Length: 208
Picture 1 (tube, rainbow, N blue to C red):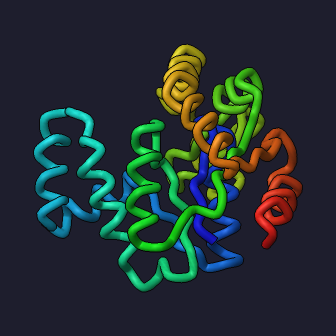
Picture 2 (picture 1 turned 120 degrees about the horizontal axis):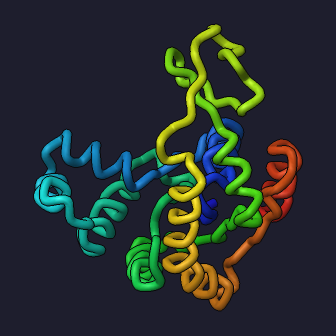
């Protein structure tokens, strides 16, 4: 099962990916993690990526595609994979399709966890995090239910920042959703429900 995971920040993508990883042992391939790993390992692509990252520039598509293709050669991806954070644009999606075609491992689905933007704004602005153990709770948690530590609001969880992140997502990812819909790969799931209910729908939609 080869899946691309789509959804706005705060839609619950990470939660659903974690459940799929746990049940089906599919590797969760995050481009951010992959970039950091390649830079740390000092691979040729990692060194190339590092020069852009050090300059504060976006890493070009061809470098990212190279890293993804490299990662998909690893044995743990043979049963399938979940790509998270990539592709971000239609151009990247076309390039990814070309590489997967060469590997004879086409995508089975583009899974969209769909949540109304206003729900996400409420969800993220009420999110609180424990300073000690990193537990993520809500505004209702005065102290951390896990370790009793102090709960705080992350800087990027204020309303203005959240709305800006959603605008950026909307502009860059809407064409991507249309692209996968056109390829007949888009599977859209209502993410504004209990995570277990969402997960049951995800499995059903993917035929798992």
